[in-house]
Length: 264
Picture (tube, rainbow, N blue to C red):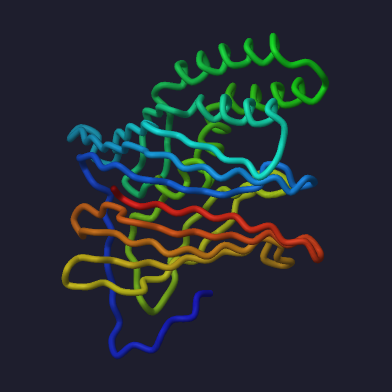
């Protein structure tokens, strides 16, 4: 539970997903892609996000996400590893999504396009790289991209788009925590965790700040997440910026991951 600061009065606020419009964001992330070698990937991408609304489907938003500039830096690793990571990530350069009024990804409208992109990249990998390691990677990626559910989990990770598209559009109070769920990428694969979200402040300028935290698993924590979200607007709440950090602890070893999002 997030400890609340001393307040003279309780604040409450309802965040609402925008009906329509477009904003550009800069997303910077650092995450581990190889735990045994302690290899980190730092990524900086400019993303265009647009919302559309259909009166016949009032509880759904049609969300288009497109990466316009994408830059990777690796702390170590071979050219082959870096090439494989970058080309695989490019599968998600353009996404057409249906998102609930709470911000949860419901479906992917251009899934055929994603799978076609992967087929071309897979062919390139099979022609250029040999060995059991690349075959295992291809098989693992194939299992993800053959399933809409698994793709949604993948793009919902914080270092992909999980910080930008998130089920945060609900009622918040400065006295109690609301709950959201989040997919996390860890040393042992993807896990789902519950996040406690507390309203930190809501100003008359319609600036809203939220704080979140989570631990996984709750009975023996080895992953902890802390984040701050800032929104602008009440009737239509556009994300302005966010900072999320996580720590994975395995014995004495710690791995730090970060994501920052800024509206351009």
